[in-house]
Image 1 (tube, rainbow, N blue to C red):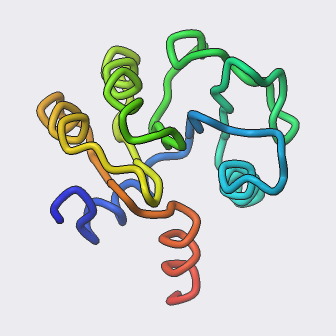
Image 2 (image 1 turned 90 degrees about the vertical axis):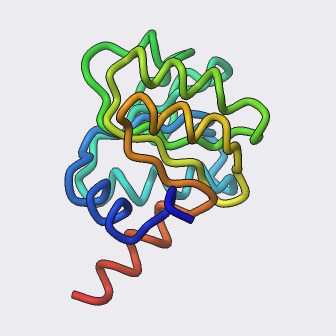
Length: 138
């Protein structure tokens, strides 16, 4: 699947340092919390996006991507597949460089829209697993 090519994943991991995590949860048992914690521990700037949270992993949460001040490199999406397209539209409007649909999140129309707008796209892959695998090869 071209949306998840090794070269695309490598470029995102190498160049995207400010990451908005859409669907971030303050519950440490949730995958979004574990991934965001891992990102933050490795020096990435993590911006939680969830209208139901005030703070996640010690960072202020925002209700939407458009409410986030400043630029975003990567939008990492932990939402149901059918909820992805409006998030991708917001990522495009915000000027993000890339979108990452987490493991189990598949929306071909949203991926195509992001690619057509010039964003790098990864779909149905876990950011933490990809980053960890590349770190362990080093």
